[in-house]
Image 1 (cartoon, rainbow, N blue to C red):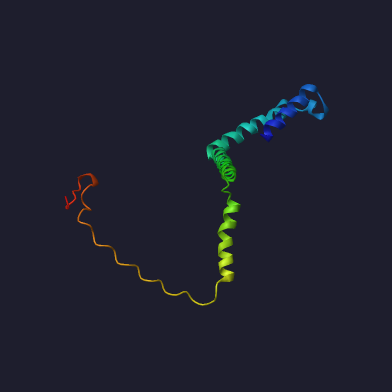
Image 2: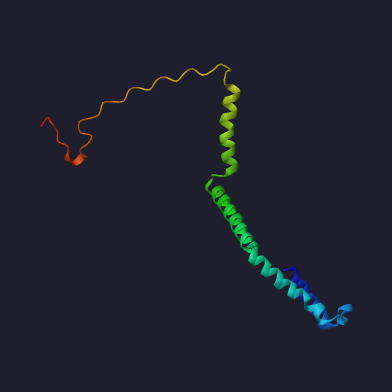
Length: 127
């Protein structure tokens, strides 16, 4: 883009015959346009243009997500504070003694004889 702007400025100065540019060769005045074409060809062939476009879209997506989260009241800053606050308060009030071992879990209930049947086909043995 800089080459294009430079070329336009030199072209305007050449046509208006302002300053030393009026005496320059047309090749010198038009050279920035050739450099702009060469730069665009290089940028497109190496994928630079595409990487910049993807980075710009990712940035816009992150900003949109942040804005939407804030609008919902689920802001990242608020979320970080709420996660840190209980941990910090628990750490400051917790005694230095080790935790007791966890209680063993109760044994699972025996399987029902009706577990394999769908609900609609179960029959009450009492009837």
